[in-house]
Amino acid sequence: MMSEPNLRTQILNEASDLINGDRQEQYGPPSENFKCLANIWNAGEDQNVEPWQAALKLAEMKIARLKGPKPSWDSFRDGIGYLALSAELWKGRDDGN
Image 1 (spheres, rainbow, N blue to C red):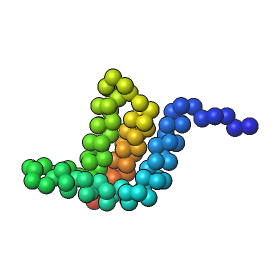
Image 2 (cartoon, rainbow, N blue to C red):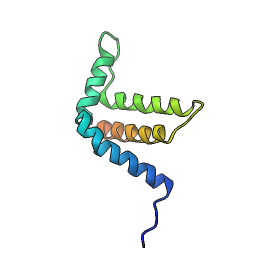
Image 3 (tube, helix red, strand yellow):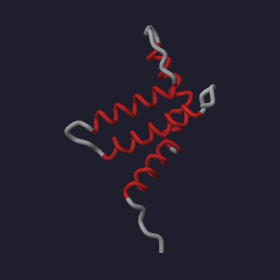
Image 4 (tube, rainbow, N blue to C red):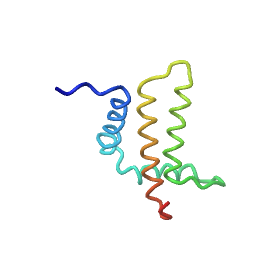
């Protein structure tokens, strides 16, 4: 008989379901979505946000929400998802590091 996953596994599974399921179907590949977001942030600014950094900034937003008066499971889950996407985009950069 299989036991229920612990909470850390549960939230990792939920984040995985989000970034590999409906959200990808709704918004397209993360590389394209975060490239678009980075381009928006870079427009008219003296900065160079890369797609992996755009995903990281969204994870930071979730962390900021968690520091507020009403932390939520969704913010933990979404932050984990954004960090996973950021790591994937970072590993896929042209310089290969």
